[in-house]
Amino acid sequence: MAARSSRLVVVITFLLAAPPAFSEHGRFRATMTRTEPAINLTRAAHKSHKRLSMLAARLEAASGTAQTPLQLDSGGGAYDMTFSIGTPLQQLSALVDTGSDLIWAKCGACTRCVPHGSPSYYPNKSSSFSKIPCSSGLCSDLTSQCSAGGAECDYKYSYGFASDPHHYTQGYLGSETFMLGSDAVPGIGFGCTTMSEGGYGSGSGLVGLGSGPLSLVSQLNVGAFSYCLTSDAAKTSPLLFGSGALTGAGVQSTPLLQTSTYYSVKLESISIGAATTPGTGSSGIIFDSGTTVAFLAEPAYALAKAAVLSQTANLTMAPGRDGYEVCFQTSGAIFPSMVLHFDGGGMDLPTENYFGAVDDTVSCWIVQKSPSLSIVGNIMQMNFHIRYDVEKSMLSFQPYNCDNL
Image (cartoon, rainbow, N blue to C red):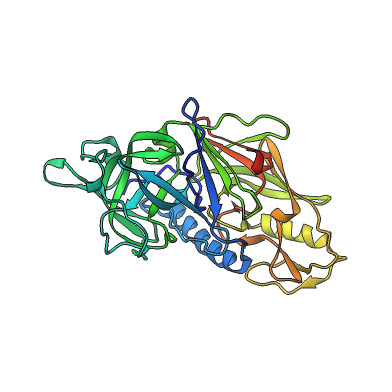
């Protein structure tokens, strides 16, 4: 399978809204909805560690054949996406992943597909469906097998470790009309899946938002996308394709690292209260909406942890749990500020973005030690409008009331 140039992960799942929509000069609006009313930090830690290991394995894969594996962060901060394709429209739901490119949906009966019980797309019921031939450029972007005569581009797209072959989707490429809000977008290439294994939540497939040619971002030719994750799980969060540059107070921008497989930026330093510690430097830190908690590789983690402890000596410590090493009794606790200093701007985090309640009496620093990659998870991204300019390789962010976007 060809190596993917896609970046970051967002196993964060999104809900693509039906009308009303936003469409102006190639701009499309969607919404994201959290699957559960509250984040379970225990389950979030377990799922986030699995995802971290898989992201690292993909990055280190010498062959370049491993794709970002998906583990639905069930109960830990996942989002669902629904969308419609075909003529007449067929409504489905899917995960959204900024760390991979392929768009795919279960097709037909799909008795050997997961998850069982979710709706399938039926190409024989759509007048706008057509198979993509082997001569197509999209087919050449996959490791594929061509049918006799080249009329059908068959593929097997893997998401897991080489030693674990049970995370994949298999089928053939097709072209179809996608409804983004109230806008019909014809000719979107996607995988019509006839067999799959792995963890894809409760939906019918996956929408890749990486930077490679197969992704929805690339096929829409919008150059950029953005989202704003609300901290209120009862509300939806907006997802914008082709969004313009961020404007207004507090906008900061930092270059995306060209050497990274994911949407990664240079973290120069971290401020904890009055202390400033070194960041991850050129090793970068990934913005990944598919990982719930945050991770720091050494030595950045140990130094930042020491800074937190040095400025919370007046608080009553509680035993660590589930990888959270810095925990306190919540009653009366006031936690130090935290700022991430990137190459070009600083992200001044609200307290709830880096300290969270693990039970009724204990709150923990929602940053964990990583043996490999550093990640800004989706909790840390809440209440920021974050824009990925794929065309110009820039990431911008701005504190924002997501309800007003």
